[in-house]
Length: 459
Image (spheres, one colour):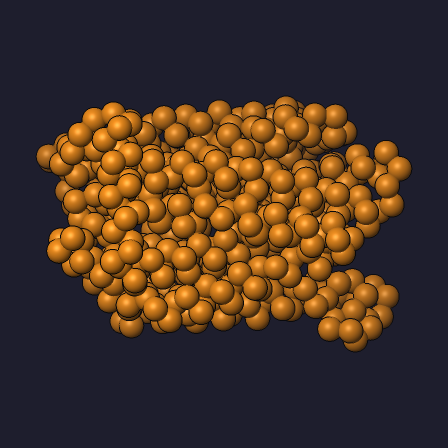
């Protein structure tokens, strides 16, 4: 491992983003999520519900899945980080959670298009999602060791950009070779590859095994080039990990900037995850887009995310991460207001002619901004966390960061599910994310742009 260059180590770290991004791009947002929403809505309509009520019920069920997985991830994230820091090793945890990722994604193949085993699909999705998010905690904790404080912003942005390129390519492969249109053909007029049966949606269902294979293949550079450089061993077992966790949580009382930042990112990252989790289902349930159309929308969004993340990394280097975060959040608030204010028949109360394509055009533009500023926001957030990180326990620090991103990960899906149920509208149901973004902006007022990592040494 000593012969591996620093540049190779950086590229190996980038490859985790490349390998893991398809879970979010293909499964959460643009293929499996909308597929599940359509399957669930058809199932509920067949049981006697009206179309709008069936759409709302389908979105509520998807929100329940994201709520439960968010709780599991949020509650376990800090303990995972503390365990890694006390033992001084991260690689075994990354391998274990990578296995969960692969197993959960593969299991999606058995989700039936008639909705007869919806709970199987949700369970498999949740297992894989938990694996992906837990692994990310340990990957993020390696960022401080890759460069100086003024370099990590650009490295974080480049990593996200590289990951989004992987997401684009994987989505293109799925659309061109596997996902069926209503005609039974793929986007370029081919039968689904490998003889998959379009009448059983096997091309679309193959998205699970495809994502699992993609991850297993492209994690090879990570495991070859990224040394397991963890902090010095500080103990062993759950008891020592709990003591480290308690010490870290108690220290938050003396660290206003970090506490405010964890609270802020808890809100705005939860809102962003809500947008990602429900963007595709919104297109399917509100705008009635077919799955292939949603996939094209995803490609455009992912390309903009790659470009914006790279540019955002440069802006981070020039101005620091905090201004980048603020600008990104305001842009996403504007997008949310637009999305909530329109449907097929009207935009902000102004009626549209039957068959108008204006909502489609506007939502495509929203997709560019969601992907672009969402990627920029994630990269800059990771960079600002490095400025608040304990150099002696980086994984635990990012465990707290993982907690802030997932401890309330159930809030956005739960609020979306509740508002959807109360309003009976999948469109209005998205509105709570606006409030979460605004709360995140308010809390950013107490966050130091330069961070407070030096405080760790003093404490």
